[in-house]
Image (cartoon, rainbow, N blue to C red; front, side):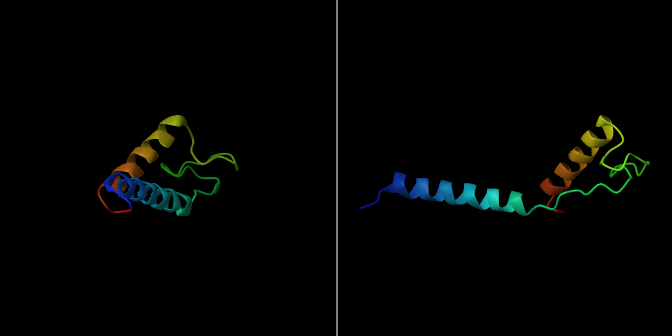
Length: 70
């Protein structure tokens, strides 16, 4: 017979699995010769023009997710 600890373990594993599945479905940025934050021209294989734009983009996306917008 299962007890509360077994049920809690099942719930924890389910929540982790759901979170991992959601993270795997998240769309990835594709390089398009423009910085994804400031729209400046960049090399073909780059996503951002510098580390500051990358960090600002990640901060903005994180804020949007916390706010429930994305």
